[in-house]
Length: 90
Image (cartoon, rainbow, N blue to C red; front, side):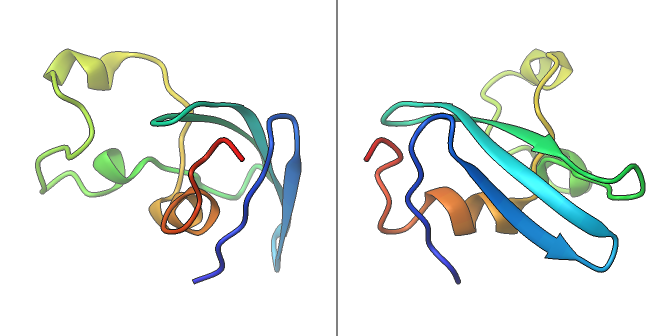
């Protein structure tokens, strides 16, 4: 796993066979990060709790929270960017 520390308004580029995916760290505090993604139209970006519909949501405390508009993320990308060794506000 690649672990990176980023500051607000910094960008990470992920080069894929479909093009470049930009990950923008728009906001972070001690327990939350707000990410923005710029990706080719044929790249699907999903939050883990939506990408695995057979499992109960792990992050939403209330079912109606899943209905709120949110940025889509991939679980491995989030883990690689903001977990294990990174406090999210360095």
